[in-house]
Length: 357
Image 1 (cartoon, rainbow, N blue to C red):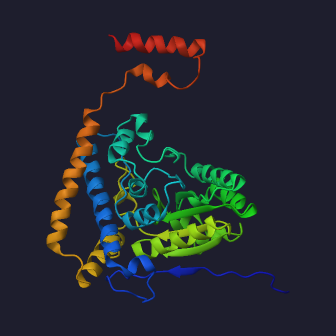
Image 2 (tube, rainbow, N blue to C red):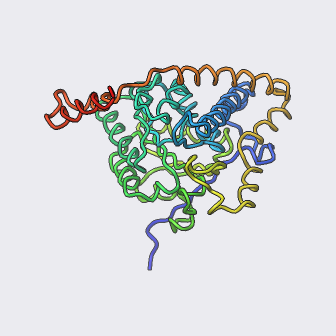
Image 3 (cartoon, one colour):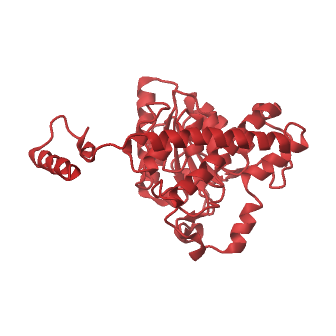
């Protein structure tokens, strides 16, 4: 028997859990420590927003909310690398990436508050809305990437999916299309260890999730998703090769979901306390903080001041959300058809009567 193909998956990491560099060949953006300070500040802003959002849900001012606690490096690394004209097809948790692209926190709150206007982003109008059906956003991104190639536009379609979603047929179809047509496509698999209550080992036999792109002919790498330097470097490389016509990539960003899946979930029912405790020792904020302080470019006093500023900025967004006038019930029929069918017109009339009671 002869061997006709082999493959290997590289692992990318610059900053270890203890905040020390594990390699010295830093990418250009990381050589200027001020860039890392700015990324850290964005990460802290996301964590502040996330904490406030959970509190709003607990006090009845927000519907079910999907926390992004622990994903800050992955999301900020993705969003900070993208250009405005690129397209992001998110799932329902990549707030940091969206904030970097101009989406306002009030948009996120509107969405989780049950108002579909939250999907009318204040950021790039060409980005896709949040996608709750698992993994279908991967196909949307592949379609956008095909359009970019056909038009000869130097744009890249980026999408995110979880470890569970990476096992869906939509993901495989998107990978196959991206490889077959050499599309400017980047798939970020946010491997946080749990597909809601299903552990990674129970939903795939693959040794890595990055290797799922190998069969499609994509460039694949596993990245420490808690290391902002590694995530940003991997994104820069994937976006550059896609923009230059060299095809798509799969980035497996290994992180951890420090929160429940959503505020409707209780992860204590299926997750070990020791596992969560160990994950907190690898989380993205503490390692970058330690590194920046050791480099003399950040301090506890600066962090306290920035936390206070983040709190004020988040409060402005929260107030904007709470002060937004609720749409009338019949608004659910808007923008469905140029002319409503008779049965929906009747339902709309009933909704107006109900609301007037």
